[in-house]
Image (cartoon, rainbow, N blue to C red; front, side, top):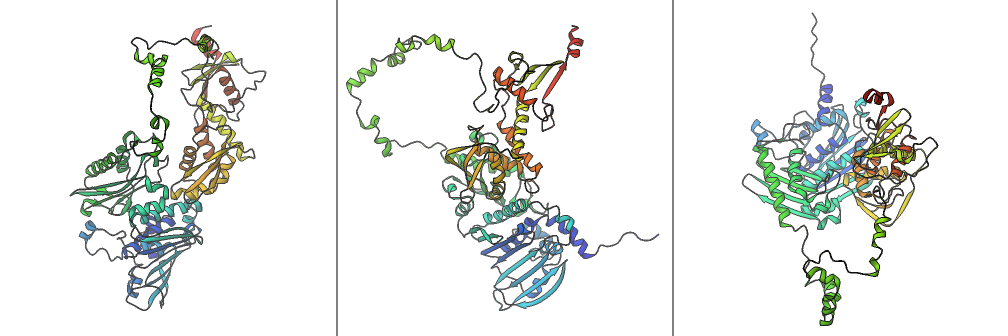
Length: 606
């Protein structure tokens, strides 16, 4: 029987291994930036073209490599950071497995130039398919410059799985900021398609946060600093007004390594208790420092998931540190009336309360209502109150929905519409109405969502939503990684009635909102849309646009618990049955249930 098991060729084995480490351009950015930091660089430049698909280049002024090291660094499991197994339990560097450069060389065309500071000439190496194609001495700056070109050129199937340039660039920006925030003493710059996106000078952590997030954060940060024998927790958290509906502004580091941990994030959110609106997430840049022997960072190829030997202690320490920081900061600081000159100039402060004025105040009915016993019910007779009963007799007998909840539901009843009195509102959630062969029970929120969904979808077909111009435009601030995404969908939001204008770094001005919904919290809606479409695959094709329409429909629709008048119920029912799809909600749920006459007869017998 012939042998069926054979050893894979090296280049195929490397490509398979690379799939765990290099999943997209941002994976290579992470590895190359961390190598530059480990090399002791004080200035690191990142150059990107075509969202990393054409070029990822990292230039640093680190210690560089000699000719032999430059060749060996592309071998699998070649590293200068581990000599024996015990070293795995005291790792403090960023990269240590020796897989990054080998994985990059397996799926891209790589060019390396490097020179130690004590040598006059450097080394230039080019690789393709894990094979060195050229090696030569060269004149270059001290440090290392490594270029990764045409990612996945030899694995086209994997290249097809990459998402749009906007999405890939957002992931690259995330990885860049993770390293930049972890090392504020190093200067960083990022250039995309010839345009500089970030230029971060070396400084303190607070200065780095302000450089990244914007000047508005300078006065909105709370310092966290708790040190114990077991671990240290340092960094900054945002005041409650920095909370967002999106999760893009949470940065947690363990020994300067960015990690993702839903468990520790829960500790941070819990520490805020009731200071945050429901569904909001706080801003934080927190560093946990502890003995590497207490953690295992070798549990995932990307090294962004780690294990603690006692995660409950870490949870308790983080929660306590944040509560302590919030307690030291006064959420609502008291006004100093003695020092505020604007208060001192008020008439109530600057002018005396004379005896005549005091007597006049005491003689008034309002004063007596408060000081005389058993007078709380007293209503002073006045000519303005003679017709007070008319107010109640002419008041509407039904409570309408809140203004803006049912904007656009005008009544244009056709001949076959049921009469107004045939609609009944049950539990402020369901509408019971007559049908030709029985009765219908309609969920009013789902019905309104479906109506709005089809209305917003029509905006893509050349019927843009009318815009109400804002007298005072509202500033909207985004996370750095969300700026490119919001910029890319700006023309499509305009179709939906949201007119945005770029307003500097990470900021936009909202100049107009949908005319039918003038009272909505537009900033929260924009944040919700961003969160909903972050992982879309390409430009706004129909499926992507539907996600925006669904998000807006959910936000604008009338909610359960809202009272509707008979007119509003009738209008909602009418518009629902004018929809292309009136029975099934866009999420797949039934909008209404129908009870036929035969079912009623079977139950009641008549």
